[in-house]
Length: 265
Image 1 (cartoon, rainbow, N blue to C red):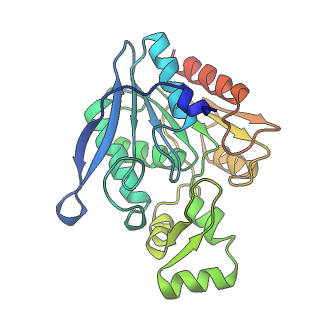
Image 2: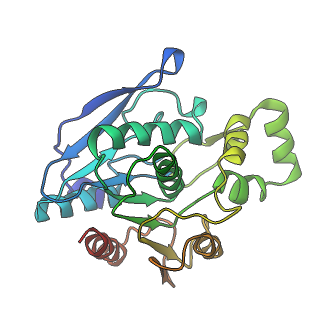
């Protein structure tokens, strides 16, 4: 039986752009759908890719409404170059910044899922610091800001922390991939340097967060922590009481699409 993802078409050509320099240079795979209006950019989660269910559903919506949409795979994800274990959050932010500069430089609508929510906020902060205009709006789905510290390191038992510190990596079993996640010391240390929830976070645009209350990976208390750092004006939080982390059920997809449509218009 075909999966929900397989049922959605993904026939756009792949564009490759080079990011980084020297030994860090890698090719990032991008798919760009043309259309009218401000571009919408999908930023996926940890070990996800641009063919995930929500990404394809958003692309199908963009196609049916004539809206431009950009999707890409981070370094070490999907069909982009580089090794996942060699990358850290700053690597993926660099990827996002390169994609935004090339394909969506004029006040896009950003849709960040899980880790993609953190990457979105870090990329926006960096662009604002360099004088770029604020996005037209941001939709965050189960946003995992600061997750390598708050949701990983702080929750790890002493023996896991010791293994990471001594061996430089610990392999964590996951329900989202057939092989375990390599959680490296570099990933943890880079995450500490990129924490956003230690003070106010003003992204200078409307932000709408969608969060499942039955999410075992990013508890909804973490979404409340994120909301607390955002400005009161323009910040919305929608809690889905029976929603999990994926938020990929038909009713969840429908809510995501309505939210993106509202903030994009």
